[in-house]
Image 1 (tube, one colour):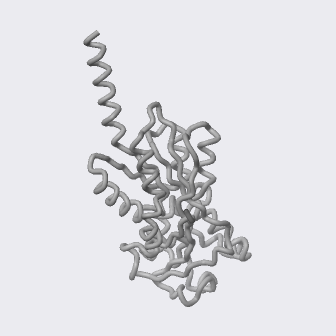
Image 2 (cartoon, rainbow, N blue to C red; image 1 turned 120 degrees about the horizontal axis):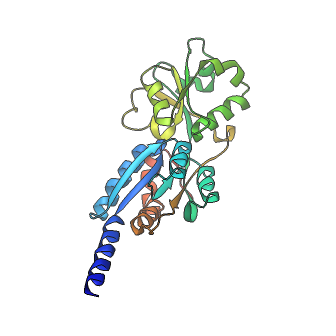
Image 3 (tube, rainbow, N blue to C red; image 1 turned 120 degrees about the vertical axis):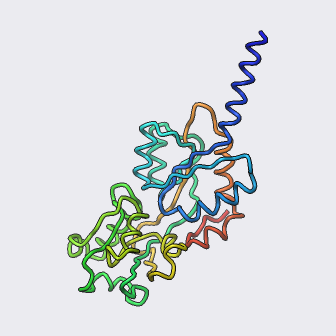
Amino acid sequence: MKRIIISIAILLATISLSAQKVNVAAAANLKYVLEELKIIYLKQNPRAKVNLTFSASGMLVQQITNGALFDFFMAADNDFPLKLKDKGLTTGPINTYAYGKLVIYSTTLDVDKLGLDALKNPTVKKIAIANPETATYGTRSVELLKSLKLYDQLKSKLVIGENIAQTAQFAFTGNAEIGFIALSLAIAPDMAGSGNYYIISPKLYSPIDQACVLIKTPVLNTEAVKFKKFVLSPANKAIWEKYGYAIPKS
């Protein structure tokens, strides 16, 4: 009986320790804002461990579906969390945590002055977009080009990034004269000052409602629940806005 009690105690201690580690699957546009939020969270919760994995939302859905060990999913829209929910792989509500904004970015053209007319500039040989099959910002980029009746004219110039971070890198290094990227990346420390950007009117593409959800695990990760609550806290409004996001009204 004593051995059983000891075994149970060890098991509960193991669960308790593992619950302090949160594996977050996050859309690539969140890199800078989440890294800053993580620092704040760990200061408030020194025992916690938060691992951030960034990729295209669609790629992360595939990984989670195939059994990847994530506790919390922060997507670039609400469709991808819904796909996981439909498969029975989530727990709790799906919450919109921020609204993203699409921009064009360039280190060689004054897109801030030219606006979308820059896409027609004859010096533009390559235009970077994220993979529209797996990345929300890529989907919205194609939608925009089609609504402007420019897609057929420009599709031969399109260079496809695996995710929005790689797309931003194409534009940042000059491998593409223009890149369709998230505002959060255009104003991030690594890119700010090296190029310029133009914020595209949200009326020209479907809203980018970025949503999150907890992933169903054998034992509920209470630290993941806590981290999700932290991400959704109105106290972080200024940090989200610093990276160009709008957040839902509380």
